[in-house]
Image (tube, rainbow, N blue to C red):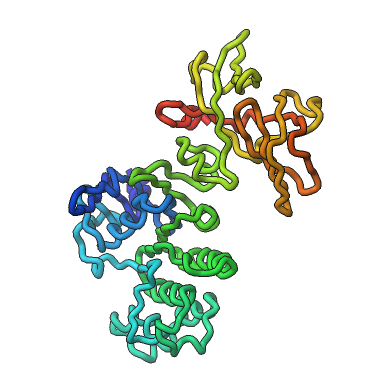
Length: 382
């Protein structure tokens, strides 16, 4: 019994069957659909998905800034679905800054401390404040400036410090690095990771950038059209996608997909791509139906090419369609029957367009997707 209570206490934020509607003049938009997930204590969770998928709406409902049409939100064992934002003890940072224009950068940063009635002397000596200013590399000359004088990146840094200066139970960050240049974003990702490790609090982070989510998060929640697609560690999301959307959304370059036909011959499972075939691993036996079409998926780094077919145990003949020199790696698009497949090779290897080339797949890393439901067939038994 004690073990069950301990496990329950580890859940910091819990959403149960959340629905959110927006009402226009002519139509009703179902922005978030029966969404359920949880965040553990001290966990960094990233909500990832394309624009308009419902992730920001979800974050705003957790914050109490948007009404929940149905469902419930809990912080530990306390339901907060209809609780005012000021009663939730959360830290907030948004893409659009929401800075007070009449306050200086410094005054914006310390505003949560002043609201709590902390004396000015204590604020001036606040250790986390000075640590944040240093870690976020904020020029001390900027502290006296007003928001209208700031760049987008500087305004977001100010908003981040104002969020993290609070001693909150949960920190909610909505695209907090989106207006920074690439170099600053990379530095700030590292800084946020350090702060999370130091603060040991629950972070929920909204982004459409998969690299950002993978670099920061312990666990990723992937959404599309208001629906939860998959929740898991970055490693599981990448290597064991639940459906074709997740497989296509994650990865750069994205996963290769090709129409295939599954057959059983002499006790072996074979996948035909056009008139060429490869064997499936034994783990698929008894779990999928032969004599049926599937979508075969494989990531570019799991595709290997060579001009010599003897380099592989099992290969398929193809032709170089496009060759791209990209510096550290080269990217080759090959034509395999009617399908085009992308692979990455070393920068020292070059192929001429139209030349014959042989393709081999890491069969233990192939995925099969149902052509009707788009669900990954091997998701549940990998």
